[in-house]
Length: 475
Image 1 (cartoon, rainbow, N blue to C red):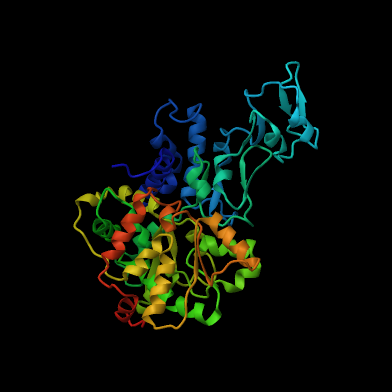
Image 2: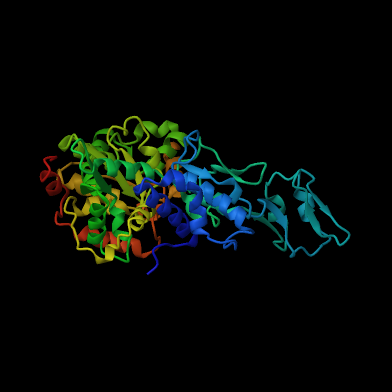
């Protein structure tokens, strides 16, 4: 069974695996330049025009795997040397142009960007074209098309442009670090920074050290990943890596749902706060609605607060599908509770860097959260949990939700609310399509993920949110 969707993910994983392998052995510094040669040995290129360029790009991947450009506050970075294979963006005339006499494309172009050769075939002057698209609409043969790069298509908030060197450029003021561009780039020219070296160092220093213990907080979407093994074996693998304990972020989701349902009733209108990409988008694109963002922390933060209250020596590492979580942990209000974060891609690299075959391990269990907390992993789960929490608390209030599956739907809902035409008192915003199961840091993406999360939810021992919270003294 394949562990990854694409070969780009596999390449990224191999770099992370080798960086982690040397980090465990304290030999990373002297082997940084050797990693590209390990991945692409010999003199024959496997992916690029020549092995020299291939190694140069791999060197950049190694840097990102070790934390990336410290001067760039964004966790999403562009490897410019790898971003040179996409066609130039913009409108182009294709071979479908018939050299017609009507010249409608010329008539509608207000910039004079269209000319014709001796065969009456149209040509577009890129220096004059402003990409208005009027020529494409006017052409009766649909002979003019708009080339947009995969990263630009993936970014629904228009945070990506093309710089003067022809490489993708990210506007950090607009970017919400959702990682959609990371997953969709066919050349892996956009990547998320990794803190895997810091996490390994944290684990190593905790071994035999009574000063602190490292806890892994796993997102409920883990139930849709590592499909080649059993979830209980993944949990055992985490302990083998050196984590003291593994706790469900879904327990934090139970806490959030319980509190959030009351907050909706008290304030009359609310947007969810569990997705950092969505929260960032509201603040940057719809600042007039920012006051309506739930004041509850994300489930990750809520459960980390609980862990550190219970064990003051704890250090907490979040493991999930989300690149935006790597931005969230840098917020001043979050830093005291979360010490680092990594994706499922990085966790796979960590397992293999220690040659851990989790398929051969015994199964451990997760018994922390309710069914509803676990359903936070997919679109609609936050709403289901909020409605259930209101019911369990006998709140005399009807939650009228608007469930947004992906940032494009979030944009539309927020726009309608800002215009006063959305009949809803709760907007559930998920930046990734499908919810967290569609996160850029997932190993696999597909229709089966939702079914796996629902199955995981129904397997929860605690069927009510209240029971889950009573067990930990939070209700």
